[in-house]
Length: 241
Image (cartoon, rainbow, N blue to C red; front, side):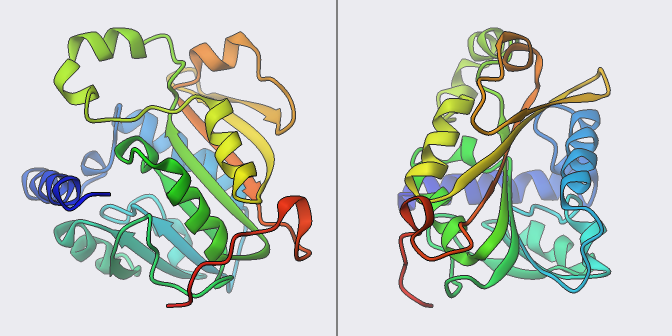
């Protein structure tokens, strides 16, 4: 991310946190209902994890990963100092840094979340490489982003042209390709349907088909870092920080 874009998004999110405060509304992208539906779905994937080390990339005010903080060590990473201050109150250890250059050693975390991050970054491959680098072998990464193929996206891009020209929306095939190029294994695609109250789950090697791709408000890609060194292309090792 260029210094100009970093300053732009940092200012943008600081302003949101000042205007909306420490509320779920500060973190939602489409609606609060969609945010809650997505959070419930991701928590069901993680399950009853205890004693784990979790990284929440783009943690915002910490509302998304708050349910995990009581039984685990949760590190919250974000560009916004204002949002990180709220995240600290919820038990997250705040770190201000870029998603494309995570300041952590290889294999440090059991689970890495990246929720509503990719759409703000043009080089999604850099983010995916980093989150796979810092998760331990056999550990899970869960990438959630706006579903580029949702039926409403065409209309939103037209009505909010200035906003969407700054975004980079990714279809499921592209996110899956980024994960595989970085050495990860895609386990599943999940398409939460809001407000329908259900999630369409598709195995990682399967085409989801038109219904979930067009109706799913959010794309969730569940992947793992191969448990054995060199598995499915291996993980590109970054410098230790």
